[in-house]
Length: 526
Image: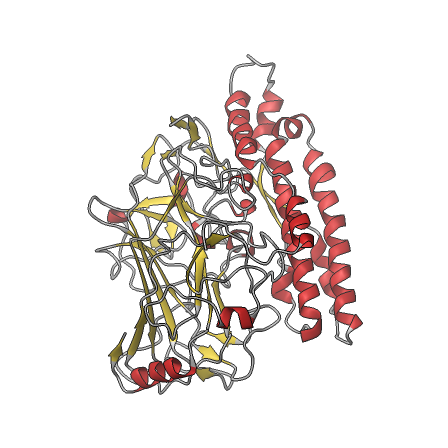
């Protein structure tokens, strides 16, 4: 499959794609950047002091409650309809953010513009969509929690809010990170940062840098830290999320599968787990390794019969994650596509130099095999506005992985060191379901001692380690030049804490049995 290649699209699906909103966020982002520059000039363009204050009060992004995470009891027969409506909610937020990014001057002249022209109409659309979700559930005899209707209203994150503030974790100039004090290069002076948008950006390759990134919606200087200046921290992940499952006891073996680094450019902006049947359901681009037929319209039968990039042909599992890009002024193939440049995901896509896919055991005992088509999502693509309850993020550099793991900032690595993204998946399964209504409650992380709670069963823990050759960004006068960033929903501002990873199990029965045997007997297999 080539880049953004889509198969089996019906005429209806093609019409849906054609009907997608044209979201020129790259331009909108530059309007935002230039707006701030103009607002702080001395009346050359007729700006008054009050208008300058209005500019400072601009909101950075839109924050909407995540309805999908609250839907924990949806009848199976209603899930397709509900998934479609949840994708509509995401599309509505994307469109509202596009309007937010392209109307900065109107906002400066009218303090009520955002509420009246963007947030208010968005609430009405969301209310209608949530009501359709209610009908989908009740139509098949399910119960709908009427309090979910209160999730229609969205708020805004003000431009004065620090860009690194995620889930209530205040970052003053990027100093707070994973409970560790950060220093060196990331200090924001004089309030130059405005809700993820930086003033006085640097020009590089004809692109505006430092003003919310090349796409206008991040990253910014506070999203980066020189890893050599970070005090060491030993723990992986946010809270207990993502802690490695195995240790010196229990099932100590491992099973490594080699599936390449997506050298054949298998990409799309779908997500068959959360938005089946919906084109561009992710609103950002994914790398795919392993299964070669994963798109929004793939059935389990088609996935099970697909080709695989894995050396072990018994592994047709699908491993996918948002791409990493460097915003150096260049563009990639999707600069005019939905999920790409139209939604603020811009810059050159970086292929991993390494992609290690490793399954390990459990500290307290043996593991059992994973069922065919088991789906696991780890991390939260919306953590910038949702908070870090489901975040599972580990950023580091080669040579520093045992010392520093970052959550809310991207590392600037020293010469000769590479950027590393590490993800440890949930390793406890409810023993019954291959998925759940919110795609989370059927699996869980092990407790600190390695045991699975609530009668869940230990399964092999997938550990994904991605290594990249990334040109080191430079921090200059409160701006960032040549930043890199993970693809995100546009309103998530390319924050590092939004990184996430997805897995669908399609190991053959024989290969899964081999994996379990290797892990439980302490062998290291590949």
